[in-house]
Structure formats: C-alpha cells, structure tokens
Length: 138
Image 1 (spheres, rainbow, N blue to C red):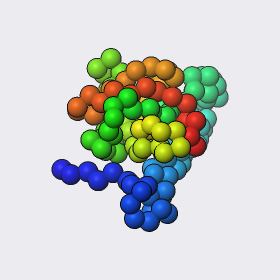
Image 2 (cartoon, rainbow, N blue to C red; image 1 turned 180 degrees about the vertical axis):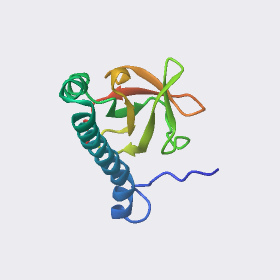
Image 3 (cartoon, rainbow, N blue to C red; image 1 turned 60 degrees about the vertical axis):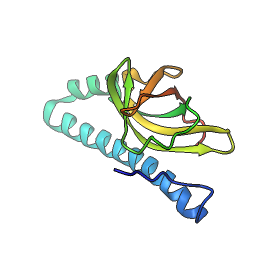
Image 4 (cartoon, rainbow, N blue to C red; image 1 turned 120 degrees about the vertical axis):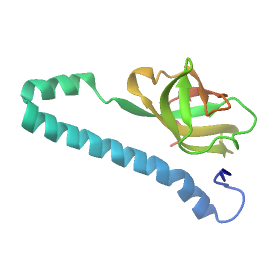
C-alpha cells in the first residue's frame, strides 16, 4: 500500500496544514469524548468511589510529540504502531518535516504510563527511531 505523506511545500498550504492539524484535533476530541463518557458511566452506574478512583488514575492515553531521528519520515504513515522496548504502546497521528524546528516531527497517542518525555521508541514495521517529546510545536 502506498501512503502519501502531507506536504507543506507542494500544493496548497491550507490543505497541507489541514492534513496535519485534523488528526490532532480529532485525537483531542475523541480523548475528551472518552473522558466525558467515562465520567458519566462510572459516576452514574458504578458509584462515586469508583469515579474518584478513575480520576486519581488519570487518562489511559496521552497525546505526545515525536521527534524522528531518521533523515526521512516518508516511510511513516498515520496510524503506524509506536513500540517501546519492542512492545506496542500507541500509534502515530501525523508525521511531517517541521521547517521551523528543522526536524522530522509528529504526534502520537501513547499509553499514559509509557509516555515518558525523552524515552526512545521505534515507529512502524521498519523500526524508525524516535524520541517522545512534549507537544512543543503546537
């Protein structure tokens, strides 16, 4: 399957920005919907004690930045699996070359307990190396 990455230097700038921003927006939206549904279900059906416990545990997943260490990110597509120590822990939302930071960057949704800033991970079946970062380019 041939995956085409969003390009910020070819074609419409607006289209390039949208192709990078929409997955991030949808990821945040679904996270909020999940948190709201979780609160309603746990609070209404399981009880207040369970709701307090769920709030103390925090979210199960976290939106993080990725800094790719390879020269090219073109073999990384959206929804590629992110691996930490060889074990799947999340997936890529977007990947692109950031001209302002002069690095290959992206966003991923990773299990919150495994989303440690500075942690080295691999992405996709080819094992592209990356580092988890804060979402500093938002």
